[in-house]
Image (cartoon, rainbow, N blue to C red; front, side, top):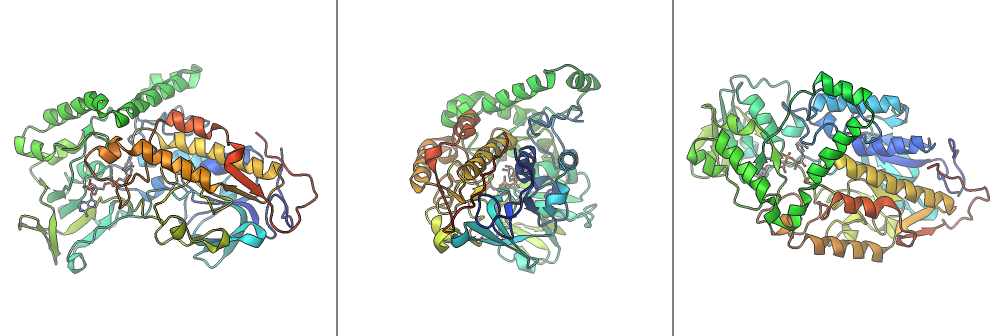
Length: 514
Ligand code: NAP
């Protein structure tokens, strides 16, 4: 077990004048990484955060009704159970409080540099270290760089003709304008994804009129949300194993969906539930027809809501499926030529995912830009390691996203994997650890083979899982058990360990405690 480290000239730990590890982002993944380091006795790390508070997704998304559609008992760190969740499905505020509680408990605040947006990172070959540039002008030197920026953080706003001429208010769901009072306003919502179906029911009763522009109807199943009872909370607190059993039960229920991804016939039961849900909540046959998906369930993320359909049946709400032809000064012209006057347009149009790195300044060994390394599409070994980019670890990188289970499960598996890589780096008295290109290539062939014929690629829809060539670049194409097994132990032969040109420090290499 080690304690804090001082900089070493060319040793195994921090590069001269730098840190051992720099983490970018304070969402669930970045903080999960930081907690693992702390627990292992590693303290020489800094976390760079562009905002002035922690929380990632759960800080950024504050739209009305923002909540998680995975149950609280599962959507939390396995090692930090919370016995008093107020609801079965956690709301944004409670999740943010949970995250802040973890930050305080593990003493992470002193490691965080708030207001420090990373603008780029370059690998310094001669020193086997990363030079991390920030918008404040400060640079950070580090042996290891962990990117924990989340796959869904760059809002995507469609390039609608005439949008720049609109004189009303516009904003994206992830940048909600709380200063703008929607009461009595004529509002248009573009998009009907996971975010929109949460805020539409919240704003519908307030506004004068709400026009929802739907391009593709989502599959929606009921959300069995309710308050967690006092009896349950007491049980969780006082009877050992009950909370864990609940968590495991929810995990298995969620995981059962994965069987259908490869074999959509198995999703029939869930599809039946979604159809029953629609029929029960929407009586108007015309509206019902508009809301009926024509692609296989699971192709896009299946949504969970019990109040979205009822909101659409309100007299002041209209669902438009003809698309947006044009935006004018104070109106939207629909695909069929109808013009709708609006005061505000809210974009629930999601995020840049497979193209999120298009403008990133990340330069690896030998001056290779990440855009060149990823010319054929974004890819990483197990979503974590990128060939040609030593000592860089991505959390929630390519093909490690889930449409059916808790991302925290994946985060914990990835953090464990990265910790093992760090141990190897130290134990080998090395300065560089890099995934072998052939290993990454083999892994990605497997990903693409598994994805062919699976619901995301063959389900008859497009989604943010796919890149512009229709290849799956975001979703993990197998079970989470499979992911856990693959990341449980780092295969030594998958990585190359090496030293910077300078001779390694003669001091005994430190070890990271288990
Ligand atoms: P999203 O799921 O990507 O949905 C975007 C919506 O905007 C879709 O309905 C899409 O239509 C529509 N859209 C995009 N571009 C458009 C255009 N040019 N014209 C018309 N419509 C357009 O985005 P999101 O709702 O923000 O959610 C993003 C992800 O965040 C989710 O998939 C989920 O992983 C995560 N999320 C999770 C939760 C949770 O509870 N766990 C909650 C919110 C978000 P098409 O379907 O036709 O593309």
